[in-house]
Amino acid sequence: MKSKKNVSKPMQTGGLMMSTEEYKGMARSAKEAIEQVVFANRILANEDVLDAFGHVSLRNPENSNTYFQSRSLSPQFVTRQDVLEIDLDGNVVTKTDKKPYGERIIHGAVLKARPDINAVFHGHPLPVIPFTVTNVPIRPIAHFGGMFYEGIPFYDDYDVSSGMLIATREEGDRVARALGSSRALLMRGHGCVVVGDSIQSMVMAAIRLRDNAQVQLWAMQIGQPKFLSYEEGRQARKIALESAVALGRAWEYWVARAKKAMPDIG
Ligand SMILES: [Zn+2]
Picture 1 (cartoon, rainbow, N blue to C red):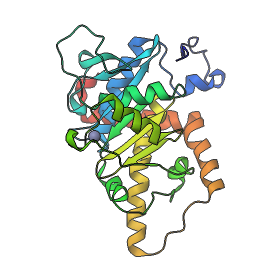
Picture 2 (picture 1 turned 90 degrees about the vertical axis):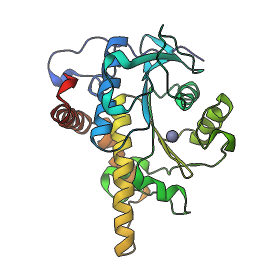
Picture 3 (picture 1 turned 180 degrees about the horizontal axis):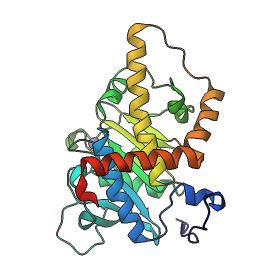
Picture 4 (picture 1 turned 135 degrees about the horizontal axis):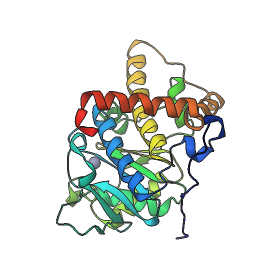
């Protein structure tokens, strides 16, 4: 795999001078990346996208062949001390006896297959599950779901002996292949994978996938929804994921809510 580093120069003063990487909040050091992993866990727990299960990861900006992820723990309890460094084959690099998540395999496989991606979410948000067990696809139904305009692929090739958990490198590779170049993947009767180039865009996409699924379920109960067109979705994605206003404002909002609900974050 080719080496990929996202280390960028410190932020210039004056918001208008910020580069794309800056306003996406790209982690510039391992320390920043660990901090972002803590916030992503707390935010996604606080927004009910993760519950006792599910996890996030962020590639190490100082070594593209490792990533940061919490030890096996409910996301709402994650602190800096719980974050482990793990290589793309799932080996824990941090000298510790703390136990990693079993399904960390998904994260390494996706980060290995997608050098364009630095952050990965895997979880089981309830409004998404009905779309994993029917032939009804999730389609962009509100502007915030536009980022899924290219469609969401599907995974249904489980090793039954693993209890529908992704626990082997072979199955991790199959999940990564099913994801392909997409932003998200649905997994039958299980949940989803969502990716981003930064932790902010991954958090945004994970929350918006759940929100779009919920709105779609509501709309389908009262009538025939009018979905976004391909072009509407494509344009809405640009605003949601490429503008400082959307990503920065959303991150600030979610961090503030998480801090209020969980004052121990600091
Ligand atoms: Zn899972």
